[in-house]
Image 1 (cartoon, helix red, strand yellow):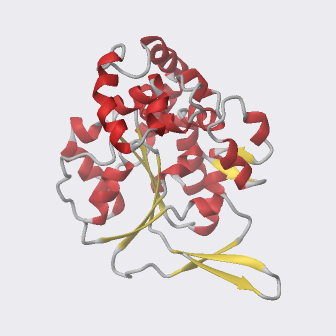
Image 2 (image 1 turned 90 degrees about the vertical axis):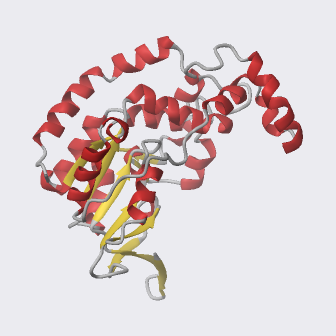
Length: 302
């Protein structure tokens, strides 16, 4: 990314490399794992977390040539799937992101819309393909919750608390995958959109790799077996029940962690309750039916 200043207009112009593929999401749906796979592919070049600039600034944008003319260039920013377009103050949004009940403090700074996000990306990358990775919502939101739990106030760390934060509200909305898929089909066209499932990495890795490589337009390579950047359920569980541990010196924290684990209720269980999981599955049932129909109508690359 190159940032330049027009002395006459005093406006910021941000230049991005032309992307062949936009890997837009979802966060906590094997995005890091897939990036490691793509980075090691000899026919691919990549950049990371530059697409968010298109949603978080009023600057002007321009395209430059991609790093290697004879390779496929992938721009990865899985947070795009959250569909948060900044229309006010970015700093205000960031300040209240993990504050329970703070939506009224940020609602005038953002527009949460997959169509608005898709339109902003299309303006700069009109010929790109769009790759979306989705994950069963209860499993996905549990992983998101594990990841952000340490960011919540020490006395407001329940899942319900998280769901009342601006971050939680945005993720609950983003869980309606059909809305995101529909938006990118409408803006980019169905032939340029591909939706892959997180679960297929384990259930059908060869098929997953074949579909991924075929869509991107590169030769197929075996997918690695080791997962990347995986949330640690026990650490999240400990921070939820014993938040004071987070502020202790590293040596003390290491010594106390095994004892805290023994005191955890259901310490090997999911961090979400069965009631939370049922609630989430019920919430997204109709959306998932629409998602299935949309995916079945997308062109197949194989």
